[in-house]
Length: 91
Image 1 (tube, helix red, strand yellow):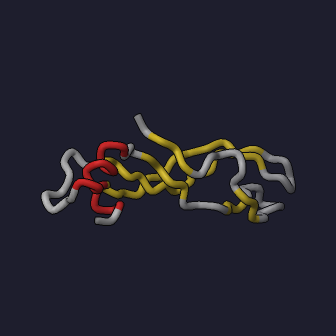
Image 2: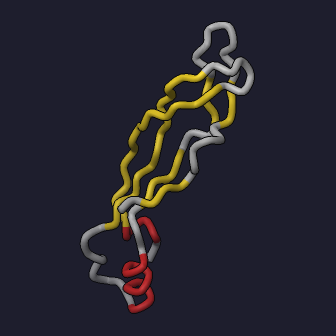
């Protein structure tokens, strides 16, 4: 059984305050995240190994955007998102 079958997936946008390394201007940028919420129940065709994986599984988010464009009209350079972690676990 694949990991995808244990989670419900949806896209979500969250705002983060980032600073452009080229022009040093701070701004709020919308980053796309893939949110994987653990399902309430395991599918019925799961074996013992799948049940153990499901018991340990947690809901989490994965960042989809690695690069963003600067909002300063004079700069407009793309920079890498470094200050925000790429995977975040949800409670």
